[in-house]
Length: 422
Ligand code: CAA
Image: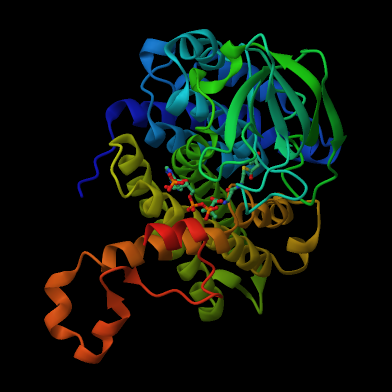
C-alpha cells in the first residue's frame, strides 16, 4: 500500500499542535485535578474548525478524513492524553451518522458537530454488555404511531453530560440474532433522558465518563438511525472500524508525550557526575520507547489511510493499530516513569498522569483481547484464500480444512454466527 499524508492533513496537524501547546498542555494538570472538562481548549478547537476534520465538506466539515482525525488527536494527546479522548470521542459519536444515517439525518446533525456548536457521545456499552456488544438490554420499542420509546441505561458514556447529541444502541427485535439492534439519535434535554453517576476515574479525568439513563424516552422515527430498524450492530462495528485508529492515535500521542519528557529529563538529571542519558541502560530504555512509538505511529497512519480509502481490510488494520499502539503507550509511559525515578511517581509532574491516562487505552473501544480476536478471525479468513500454499503444507493437515471450512472446538471463542458463516 502507498501512504502519503495529504497537505490538508498536515495543516490540521500544525493547527492542532499550536492549540495543544497553548491551550491544552498548560491546563492539563488543572483539569485532571478538578475532574472538569477543558472548555477553554474546546472553544478554540471549535473556533479553528478542528471538529470538522473528520466530517465531509458536504455536511459542513472539511475533508472527512480519518487520517486528519488521527493527526489532530495525536497532537492533542501528546499534550494531554485525556484531552485527546475528549476530542476523539466526538468522532466516535458521529461515525454512526456517517456510516448509517439518512441524508436528512446527516444534514441535520453533522454540520452542528463540525462547527463545534454541539458535541457528541456514543452509547453502546452497558453494565452487563461490554465486550459482548451484541448482548445489550436497553430496549427500543416501536409504538403504534411509528414513534419509538427508549428504555434502559448505558455505562461508560464518554463525553456524557457535555455532549448534546448521543448515538444510542438498543434492542428493537429481541427475537432476531442478526437484526436485533438499532441505533437512535437522542438529543440532550429530551424528556426521560438523564445523566446518572459520573465515574471517578484513574485517568482521563478531564473528560466525563457517566451512566446515561433512558426512562421512556419518546423518539420520532426520524431519530432511528438510517430510518430502518435492525442495522444497529453492523453500524456499531463499522463505527468502531473508523474510530479505533483515533484511539490508536491517542496512544501514539500519549507515548510521544511521555517519551519527550523522559528524553529531556534524562539529559538534565545528573547522577554519578553525569547526565543519566549517558548510561547505556537508560539509553536502551529510550531507544526502545522511541522505536516502538514510531512503529505504532505508522501502523496508525496506515490504518487511517485504509479507512479513508474504505479498504475491505480496514477492520483488521484498525484492530492491529489499536492493539499495538495502546500496548505501546502503556509500556512507554511505564518506562518513562522509570526514567524519572522517584519524581515520576509524584503527581507534581505530568509524567505520572501519562501513566494513569494510558491504561484505559487498552480497555475502551474494544479491549485489546477483543482486538486480537478480531485480528485472528481475519487471519483465519485470509488463510483460507492462500490456496497457492497448499502444496507446501503437510497433506495430513488437509483434513482440518474440509469443504465446510474450519473446524471449531467449543472453547475457540468463536460465536455461533461465525461457525454458521464458516
Ligand atoms: N463491519 C461490518 N459488519 C460487521 C463487522 C464489521 N467490522 N464486524 C461484525 N460485523 C457483522 C458480521 O458480519 C455479522 O453479520 P451477520 O449477522 O449478517 O453475519 C454480525 O455483525 C455479527 O458479527 P459477529 O458474529 O462477529 O459478532 P460477535 O457477537 O461475535 O461480536 C465482536 C464481535 C468483535 C466481539 C464485537 O462484539 C466487538 O467489537 N466487541 C467490542 C465492543 C466494543 O468495542 N465496545 C466498546 C464501546 S465504546 C467505549 O468503549 C466507550 C467510549 O465511550 C469510549
